[in-house]
Length: 280
Image 1 (cartoon, helix red, strand yellow):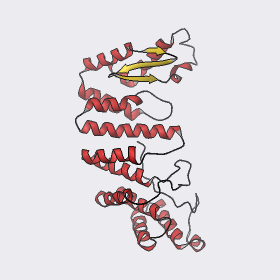
Image 2 (cartoon, one colour):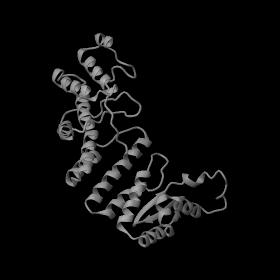
Image 3 (cartoon, helix red, strand yellow):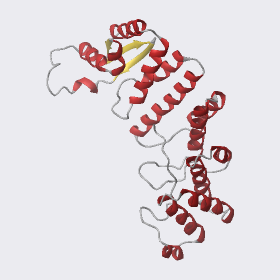
Image 4 (cartoon, helix red, strand yellow):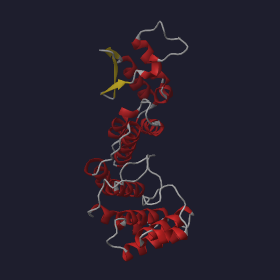
């Protein structure tokens, strides 16, 4: 999954270890923030949490307030204190924090306090099987405070993560066909992000929803629907049109498919997909 435990840095000391002597060279709020981060890096999470909480009281006008607030929520979540983390994330959602605060790293451009807060709330409620609340926050992180990034790989990873969240929601609501259709755009490898969780969940959903014979029939019907149109390979699965990525087979180093038509090459690759191989 896309989401892991991570705090937001201050941008003040980028990539360098902080020592007490650094404190004299920094304004008090920056020094306090960096010291809290140092305890976090030392895995002293309880101390770091206490320090970020104190920061909120001591420096209410600091430019680092939003980062400290978000980090406080993350540490509460990480320490299993979900009931305390939930209202902090919710307060962030109604705050005036700037989603486009810079992170100072190459992995993420923006802080996205509200997007990430809504995401973590959605994950908490999915885990609790509180479907109405999960639906609220999934739609919030997807539509109201969407993910933003410059890199196609990260955007694809986010799209996969979002589909997995919707699929978990629909599955929990007793709508397996809707969950399956949510995942279909990511059934095949795009070359940009890992989609193995999509395939795993699709197999689980198919096993739960259909007999082996029914699933085999669905997959055979999909393979038989493959068409080549204007240099695009398309197929229909569960009534949904899927366009296949040609990069799978246009680079055939062994030349084993040189004499095959584009349609036949595509069918070979479709049948090699783990979801199809399970039933065909």
